[in-house]
Image (cartoon, rainbow, N blue to C red; front, side, top):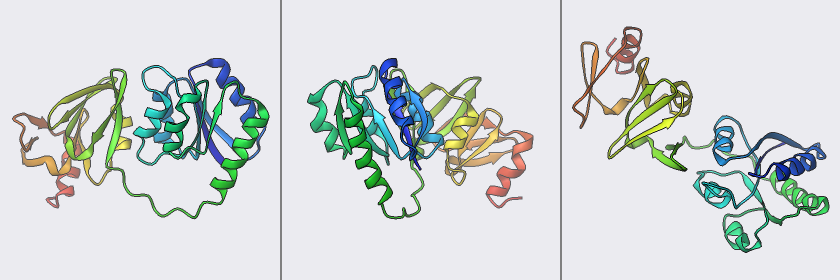
Length: 233
């Protein structure tokens, strides 16, 4: 079964592709997204094998979005603009369909995709990611784990403290915690997640970080686990 994802800001285009995908028993549609930000959320939570993506979309176009992914799934671009074809194939797109999309043309693209995806070699264990993407304004920002000092939760938002700047984005603490490697980050209090090797000292119920003047509170229910991480319990 090939898990696929549709990204298109036009409702009619999404409905058409949804109907086409439903005709293939070998395709499983995980989501049909209006915005790339919705698609990114799906990619972070589920295994996606194939993306059907429009190109000319607001805020972040399809080519920019695919280019931003570290290990993108296979992609078939579906667009009204044939002049993007060269850029699309430079990203190793499996196919490039120009709208309006006929079912025979869609069938040809899917048959090609199924042949390639189903014949791919067994994947080696993926490397642990070294970054995450977060929404800042109208763009997706790549945030390297090495540059994060700590993350502070503020209800439905988080504040990411980096080496040279601060990012505030609409994201829950539980969601970002799931995206961070547990080997490198730990929650020290309800509202704080810290990169382990950024901690310089633990003084009572506070954590001191390298290069930063502020001290972060350590919650009582988290202190024992934090000390154990450093072999101090």
